Image (cartoon, rainbow, N blue to C red):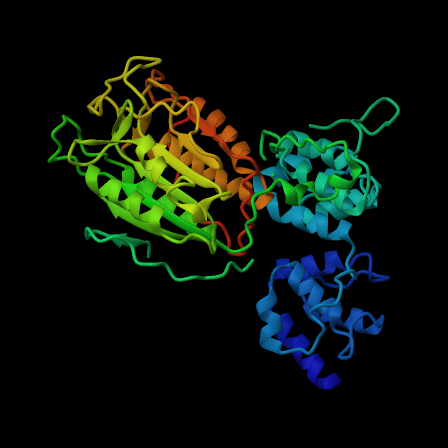
Length: 504
């Protein structure tokens, strides 16, 4: 049996990358009495663990916990080990797991900035070090430990503020009080982080049910107002009480993408660049676990029919609903490719609690890329007329939705009322590209959707074209009663292209 177990360990070692072996060694730092001779070979680590009676054929639980922590459960299935999967995972300290999770969310650029700010550690000791190696150096210098993370928080505040939310949740989990800002009494210095394309007029079939396998940059995660915040008994469960449940199938993501306006009764050009938005939305929402349905070049009646059909479906096994409309627009509605328009309020009525009871108390998210009017902050040509002097065009006009009409609804508008929004002919729209990029960046950090959209507001408001004359300000409106926090996907995030030209 022991021989079979060692063979299994050998197979595990062959499957692991060098980075993963380093991660396992890091997670075992508090368990082993000495460090493995080499981090390049998993067998060195496993030999030490067995020598110190931390791992054996009769007690493989540490291996199980290690592989689950680095999100490699498939290896356990392959080696077919017999273990108690329900056993409490307490062999690796929550502190060590926290640092590992943080390391997985820090980019190469952010790691470089961290090293630059760590003036308490000699530069030569940080060169060529991974994030986990940097954390170990910080521990060796007594800059961080299980009960003192203020130094790390001060670094994150300048480099990647979102990760401080992870530390806050860690303190809450282990029952430690939230740390206080560094003061003169605390001498540590403050340092500066194959979509389904349906071209037919038929409506989508019932999607197959695929059970899910499973906060924020420059802003803080939005906490919903909690009337029981001062009640100690409620504090323990506030994360559960005030997040929408996301435990089943995410649900349907409907994308209506209107490109070809050649037969429109209105003077509207084709929406060059919209394919980039469509592909980005498809990849991001599939990554988030949604069943994505894409409909191209729909006229007004077909758009109405799609939303009516969605409202008639049974969403009882789904967590939410996402609908995206990419089109030209006018005040009060969006254009179909025939030049007729649909009032947004009519589409919302299709998915409200009266028309679709199975979506009651579930978040319904509607993202609209189109203008809300003809007004301009700087000179532009509105109503979808292309400006030949630039590759940035307006998608004129869509409905003013200052106040949501139903509960649990979020409407992400690409621009504020009465103003145009812009589309890059090669890189897609400013709004959709920023939305997708920020979802990719902040969902793994467990940032809620409203906070992500606040970051989208910041990013898009900073954009312009080469002439520096075009500006845009998105506007989310919502009647959400809880936070929308997407579960962190197991798959790596998709890579999408640059959105447009930002301010220099």
